[in-house]
Amino acid sequence: MTRTPPAIELIGIDKRFGPVHANNDVSLTVAAGTIHGIVGENGAGKSTLMSILYGFYEADAGEIRVGGRPVAIRDASDAIAAGIGMVHQHFMLVPTFTVLENVMLGAEGSALLAAGRATARAELERLERDYGLEVAADALVGELPVGLQQRVEILKALYRGARILILDEPTGVLTPQETDRLFEILRALRDEGVTVVLITHKLREILAVTDTVSVMRRGEMVAHRPTSETSREELAELMVGRKVLFQVDKAPASAGAPVLDVAGLRIVDADGVARVDGVGFEVAAGEIVGIAGVSGNGQSELLEALAGIRRIAAGRIRIGELEITRDRPADPRTVRAAGVGHVPEDRHRMGMVLPFEAAESAILGRHDGPAYNGRWLMDYDAVVADCAAKMRAFDVRPADPHLRGSLFSGGNQQKLVLARELDGDPRLLLVGQPTRGVDIGAIEFIHRQLVAMRDAGAAILLVSVELDEIMSLADRILVMCGGRIVGCIDASEADERTLGLMMANVPLEEIRQMEIRA
Image (cartoon, rainbow, N blue to C red; front, side, top):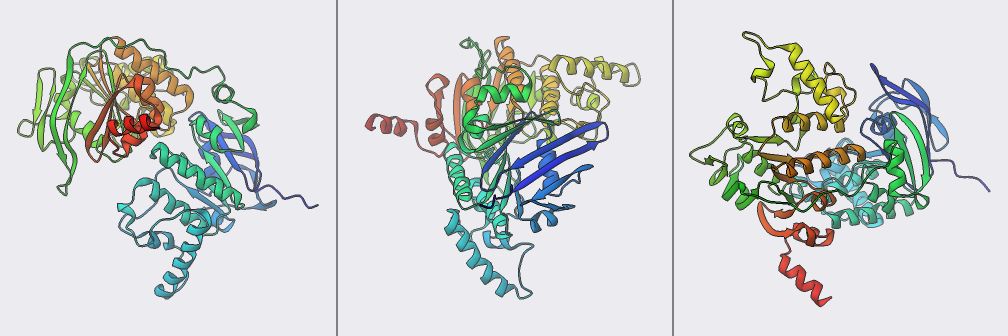
């Protein structure tokens, strides 16, 4: 009997970025026709390893084998030729193109575009039928919900002949129901012989869908486990090197007077489209109010308006004595002076300047404060010392204030932003996606800091697509859909199914009636 060779073998992979040893003699074997998970803290090296496999980076040392044969992968075209496809965390689609055009792009298949289009349409229909990836071929990608856009990314890879599919954090923008559907698709792919490599920090998802899981820590491969023989607790301990608490330890909220009062808020984009429409709510001192919803339903615009970054079209925002309206706008400096801290959703675009040293990013928005300035010039030594203290307090690694922001892992970048925003003891803290792309150990730490802020009397508005996070941290949960708040529920009464249905615009009363009938 002939033994099927592994789909992938990575042998002794080594990769350095200057002083950072991203992959240290890493070896990995992925069996053909399986779903193989890779987990690890931010900076553990898992994304670097997959980037080497897909040709974004070349390894300094080591060997790659696909189907038992050594291959040289110098760029993505080599990976595609070897039957490897990758679905990135941030989709690589052209929103103004149709599904068919996106799938064909770069692989038109004929000098005569019409002939190539006909062939591509027939192949797309076959792939949709074989793998349950139905999506309208002539629909504009930009008008599709994110779950269907992700299907387009998978179809693109399969259209190019991928038999090995890498997915990087694939569920970050999906509802629970969309996640379940994605897992059905991945199982169907596996059953048809496709090998799936899943990179995620969500251990529950690893346990739900994978056959085997590998754990990386600090650039090294530390464990391989059949998924059926491990647990969330063991995987977390292997990732972090210590036991991890999964339940957020917090007492019931002791809410005080309202700190944030929003009424009739309307926000429109540059095209005049309402992104937030008639929103009103309060957040009191000593409570965490969570906003749940699929990304793109107005949460980002709402946070930006509250932080003074985006102008409002109607309604008002009141933060203590500060009132913001269309005719009385406020800029971020004014909002910050009113006692507001802001941890933005996109730490790269709005939270840091990646080419800056960590010490410089650690004072952004506060750089004109007396603590950092002498009589004439900025006191650079004070800036560095302040950053070093923040790094110690928030366990930022490496603890080097002179290191460029781009060289820190996502979790450590997030800790640095959080340290800066909490440093001024804000009365109101706006937090967007606090643990997006953050590993389990950093998540535990960030959650403790937010609860401590609440218990110290701060009002916290938390936006997250992670329902576990919302349910664990929030005292009350608002749900947004289509720019409106479609429901409010006490966190003690919330569950994933209820929130998922509310995110799909099913009224809470209708959900409760469904439960009664069931």
